[in-house]
Length: 190
Image 1: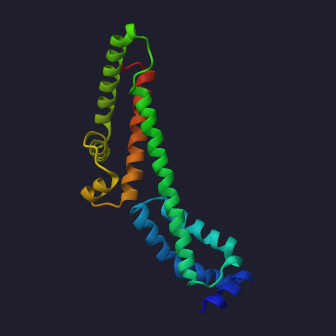
Image 2 (image 1 turned 120 degrees about the vertical axis):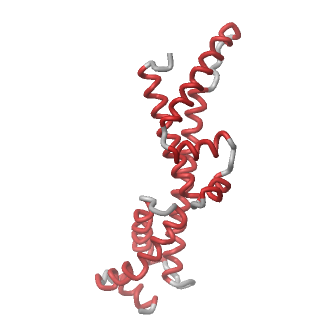
Image 3 (image 1 turned 135 degrees about the horizontal axis):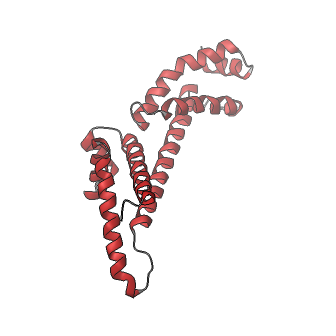
């Protein structure tokens, strides 16, 4: 079916055209999402659905400067990049929270020694809790924090997409943060 004909039918809310449009492009978009976000990423199908919804909302603006699929594809890729940026912001927030948790507070000079002792205890607690994480999380955190590798270097080392590295690292750091907070609440750091 030609793009112009398909767009006209879609604008007319033709269910057969909608089904054809969805079934024709869904798998290709989903594969592209998996490529960017990581194989098996739970959000890939959500992003695919969002792309179709966005196209249906904006279809009246389509100007035929490119193919309909290319337009749909660009919308989908932009949604993937938005998810990656959200994950990066989450990673930064988690890292900041961890740094605030272990970072020195502004205590007077007389308490500096006590502060260093408490910081040392917190660092030991974090390391202890990190050891309770599974091997994939330990490896990711070690590569990122201990070896200061970039996301791209980690992706290359582990042979996985950078989006997968970012999402896994975010989940691992969040799990570590929760373990540390739980241990602090239970008083096990004393």
